Length: 360
Ligand code: SAH
Ligand code: SF4
Image (cartoon, rainbow, N blue to C red; front, side, top):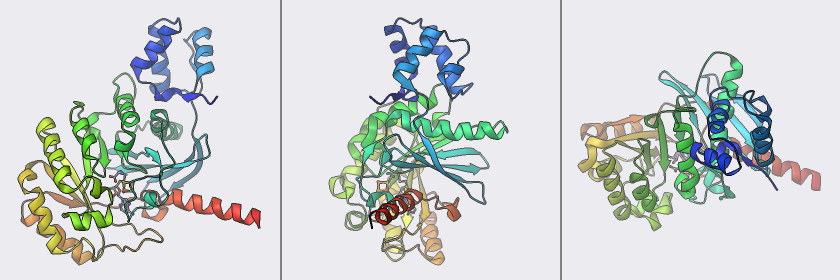
C-alpha cells in the first residue's frame, strides 16, 4: 500500500493520530517544528524525537512523494517546477518574485473537468484530485529550493491558480489552507493567500461560511450568460443569476474584497460593449470589487488570440471611467511557459511521442 504524505495532516490531526498510537501530545509540536520550521527531508533527521515515534511515522507516512522532473528559471526570476507524482502523473508549480514577496502558484488537481475552452488544463480532463499533502508538498518543495539557495528567503504568498478547480477538490484545498496558515508552522498569512474559482456557486456559499481571511478570486471572463457559456461551460450549471447571489452572500458575510479575473480574448470578450456590461454587473458591489484584466496566453490548438493593446486599454479605461477598480496583470515567466497548464501539456505531449516512437 502506498503511504500518504505527512504534509497532508493538519496539526490537530497529527496530534490526535500520535496520541491514538500511544505517543505523547508534545511529540506533535516537535514533529511539526521539524517539518515546517527546521524543514528536514527525512523523519530520521528529527533529532529530539524518540526512535519509537520516528518508526511509527516511517511505517505510516512519507515526507517526499513529489519528484522534481523539470525546473525552468525565467529571466525575471520566475521558476516553474514540473513534479512527477507517485502514480506517474505530472503537476506544475510556479514561484514568482514580486516587490512584496515570493508568491507560489499551486495546482489542486491532475487536469480539470471544468473544461474552459481557452485553458490548457481543460483539454486534458481531470485524472484525479490532489491530496492535501500533495498540495502542501508543492510549497515545501519550493521552500526547500529556497533554503538550498541559502539566502534566507521564504514563500510569503500563495495563489491557488494552477491546474484544476480548487472548489471541485474542496476539502483537500481547505486542509491545505489550514496547514500552510498554521502559526506554528509556515504561518503564511491568510490575507496573503488567494483561491481562484471558475464559479461553483454552492462552494462559494460554503467558503463564505468558513470564517477564513483568505482572498477569493472569481474567474468571470464574460459579463453575460450567452458569452460566458460559450467560453466556460460551467456557466450552464451556474449561470450568472445563480453565481452573483453567491458572490453577494460572500461579500456580505466576509466584507472582503473580491477579485474578478477577466481574460481578454481578441474579438471575443474584449469589446467596449462587454466592458459596459461588466460595469452593470458589478456596479452595486464596486466598493468591494477589483477587476484583474489578464492578457491571454495563447494555447496550442485553441482558437483564441490575445487582445490587441488598444482594445485592452479601451476596456480598462471603460471600467475605470465607470468607477470599477481594475488593473492589467503583469506577465511573469512568459519565456518559460509559466501560464496555467502549459508546461504540463508539453511534457505529456513529449511522453506520448516517446511512447509512439517506442511502439513503432
Ligand atoms: N480553476 C480555477 C483556478 C485555476 S485557473 C479558475 O479557473 O479560476 C487560474 C486562472 O488562470 C483563471 O482565471 C483562468 O481563467 C486563467 N487562465 C487559464 N488559462 C489561461 C491562459 N491560457 N492565459 C491566461 N490565463 C489563463
Ligand atoms: Fe479548469 Fe480553471 Fe482551466 Fe477552467 S480555467 S479549465 S476551471 S483550470
